[in-house]
Image (cartoon, rainbow, N blue to C red; front, side):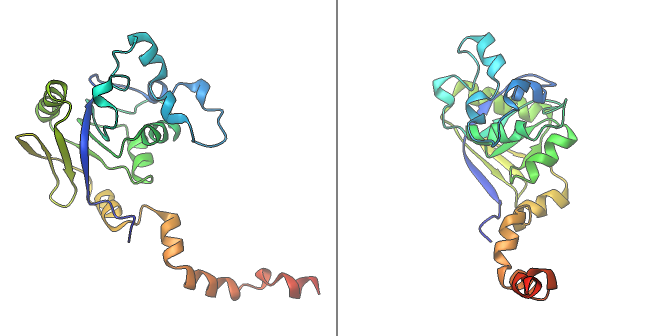
Amino acid sequence: MSSEVKAVTGRGIPLIGNDIDTDRIIPARFLRCVTFDGLGEQAFADDRTQTKGEHPFDQPQYQGANILVVNGNFGCGSSREHAPQALSKWGIQAIVGESFAEIFFGNCVVMGIPCVTASAEIVGQLQTILKNNPQTSITLDLDAMQVHCGDTLAPVFMGEGSRQTLMTGTWDSCGQLIAQIDQVQATARQLPYMDWATRVA
């Protein structure tokens, strides 16, 4: 199905630091939104203000990058879904890191964003490559479970259940419903409370 996520290719953005929590990814004052539209503009809003244009999400060489490379315990803190939504709206389609907070990881998977882990050494190498040459192409291959960036080809890791969910497209619950629309309609026709005309009569 079209929702299958088997590989993500593009450019990377290095975000250095451990324990970057969801409050930093999207500050609490932006949680009052009715939809997630516009959250991308506010991703790391406070960090970006404090660094005065030096944050990677502000630097021109990383605009359009779609693979985030992070360190340990990324996405810790509160369980807000707004954090991966903000990253997605900014343009992030995959994340490579040393480790992820469990709820953040789960929120990403149900959005179709693969979060894979690699050793601290490999993550450091990737971040250095992307700092020195932001235009370097990077590919996350879920089929081979490898990341390829410049001359670096390294293994990455993800639980098999999450990996299969992404590769088969079953993370996309709405897509599954649409793909099985004939069965959904057949089931709906058998439900007595769906026949409103009969019930009114």
